[in-house]
Length: 292
Image (tube, rainbow, N blue to C red; front, side, top):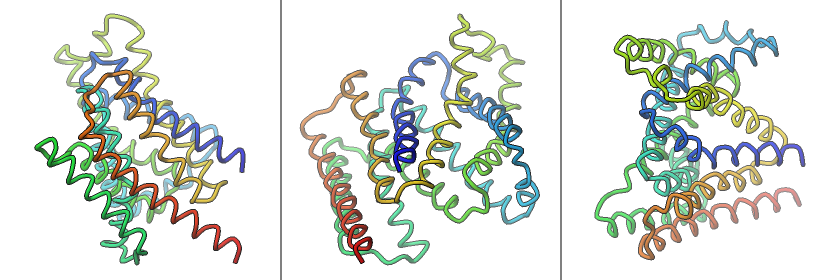
């Protein structure tokens, strides 16, 4: 249990600190960061797979149904990555954190609409409170928080596809990056041909090193999360997942000094209340089940 909690906590801590990484390579365009992230992640993952001699899944990956599923998940994952990188680099860290705060509730809605799962009254209440929070933020700012909703929807869709996927966390991410690799290689090759490759034109080796580190920075938290998820109850894992957007939110307010008025806080309070209701009800049901 302790090992699982530590692994999951480290994973969410890494994800929460991602804004610091993307700010450190602020001179690199978001799309190029995404492509480097794909390239270096695949290199790192291939090393991990080679060390573990974990190649049997490649036979399963050739099946058309599996291939189609992972093409869709790779698209959603890359869209989520690109939107998040763009948000961080354009001063929307707080709104990006909002997307990951409401993501668990989006997952519930996807389960209800697509998987035909039944919702309990407390879950309906949590969704209603979150909807009120989003509506308040929309009314207060005069525009829909599209960044947050897009991040929540793409990551929720990605999670839905991975929930029923035929491959595990390591194999699945490896296959997704393999599918994205040709696009990334062509794009980086074109940038090199036109003289716009930030990796080549970087004024210092620090930027190049940070781009190379995109591989382990992407893969290690996922491996930690997969390890932790196997060792601790889902109720604890569900509560730990709020560590990541909380860190992002605090970085946006205190380090990056993004605008955050009292009116905007009211919308976040509604969403946090929804999460408290959702998490509290889940813990209560877990304890009742354990006693039974």
